Image (cartoon, rainbow, N blue to C red; front, side, top):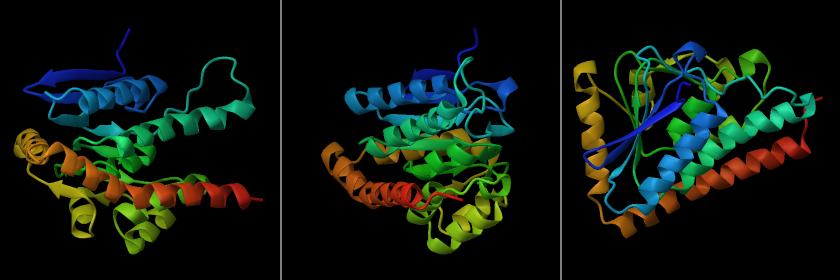
Length: 234
C-alpha cells in the first residue's frame, strides 16, 4: 500500500512529502491526517526545529483536494467530506506555534495553495506555479478569497480568485506573497536555512507573534464562512 504522505526527520527538521504520483498529488484524507500528526509533533517535541511541507513529484506539488470519496457515501455528505479535508489541513497550520515552511516545485492548486499561503514561508524554484481554479469550475468560495487577501493583498486576491489564472512563484513574490524564489539547485538548502532561521527565535516570542499574525486570518475565514451560510448561491 502506498503511503500518501511520507514523514521523515532529518537533522531536527520534519519533512512531510505528498506521495500520490498517480493521483496528481491530490490531498486525500490520509494526507491531511498525516500532516496534522506531523504538525502535532513539531508543536510538542522541543528537539524538532520545524516542518517542511513538500511533494515527491517534481512537476505537480498538488492538484488540490482529492475528489474521490469513500464508497457508499451519500451525495449530501460528499461536500462536507471534502471541506473537512481542507479545513483540517488549514486548521493545523494556523494553530501551529512552530515554523512550517513549504518547499515548492511544480504546479500547486486549490486547497494546497490555500494552506501554503498560511505557512511561515513558501520557498520555491522557477518551476513552481500556483492557481485557484474554483470560479473557473463554478465554485464560489469567499473562504478561499479570505485566505489570499489576508496573506497577500486585496488586489492580488481579486486577480487570482476572479480570473483563476496561474501565477508563477516569481510573480507571487513580486506582488507581495509570502514566497521566496531560488534556483532549483539551491531549493533544498534554502528551505533548510529558512526553517533554521525561524526556529532560532525564542519559542515563546515566536509562538506569540504567530498567533498575532494568524488571528486576523482566522477571523476573515470565519467571516467568509458566515457570509456563505447567510448568502447561499441561487
